[in-house]
Image (cartoon, rainbow, N blue to C red; front, side, top):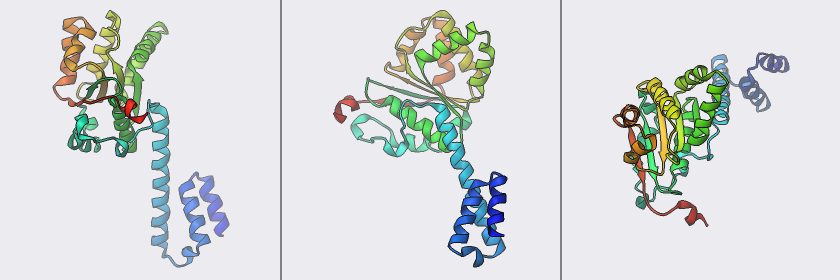
Length: 241
């Protein structure tokens, strides 16, 4: 009977329950628990298994630059990192509200690591995340336009609760790239969250976008409800050597 139950659970793809049932049988706890107690343990194991599997899928799909997590972040006061703000963001309420997070700082100050850690936390909380180097993202948009499926790609981006654009501002945006970015920000405004990491201060992003009207439209949708991190200090890469 015990073996048949385990087999049936596996056939129903209830792997968490199957493993928990096997453990209960091996430790003879199954005989000591009431039906409701045993069922509660099995259901909890299955829920935990599914949450872990979903997290693994989300993490793999996001393709973060760094395998970073919030507990790994260096909170050295000299870095100018607001620990209170970061703690607030770990609840991921900013994603629900469709608010932006803007991270600026010099090369090696930990911008990409922080962005990846926030993305990792979003995955922990069950949110789908799309992470891109900005230059590669623009190339991907160009390819989608050439392939004739750019509208479908825009729709996919709009449905992602969190979009992370890393290394923003390394090159000036071409005219079509400006329009594409404006379209993406318009689709996400107030509905989905965007994290942007850049070596340039936010005031310099106008120069990157070039066209003043388009820059105003894009930044207006990002800045007013944004959370800001301005990282300071020497490169963390140098300190690791």
